[in-house]
Image 1: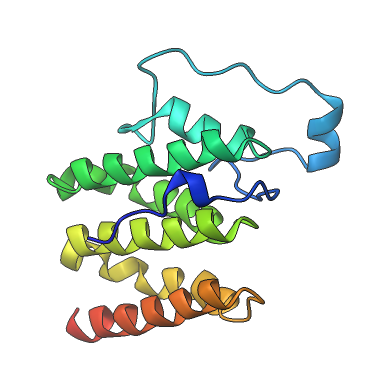
Image 2 (image 1 turned 180 degrees about the vertical axis):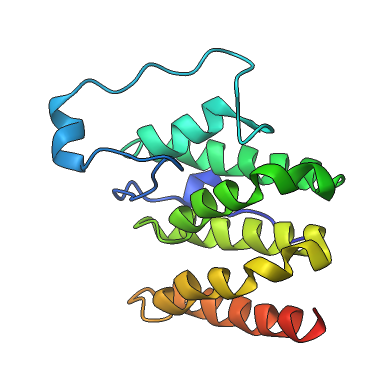
Length: 168
């Protein structure tokens, strides 16, 4: 397991993460007040603390909150990965959410999401095989990043994904 990038190094770039369901465009979101934070103890996808998803989606301009949230998301994935069968009912929707984070404009959130994705796929083993083709698309899109670190991380992860699919 590789560590998530430290919160102190995140830049306050606008992100494009969205809730698994849907998020209003930025212009509409600016006109409307942000949704209230979720109640304590609430869960998204049946196992991710809702405040983590809220921070990643709704706190786009707050890089410190997002940095802390991506670290908590990684911890939640590592914990949930101990019982991968429990993730199967919501795996598809969680992967959609995570892939949106891979496409985030803040490259450190995107790289952290790739690391989380790698750990999740590793924990899921053969259960992740049906999703590997879908996972490759956003990674291929990120290969064209102007940020070399992001493109390099994508290429590295793509090689691992290819190895996983060959073993599946």
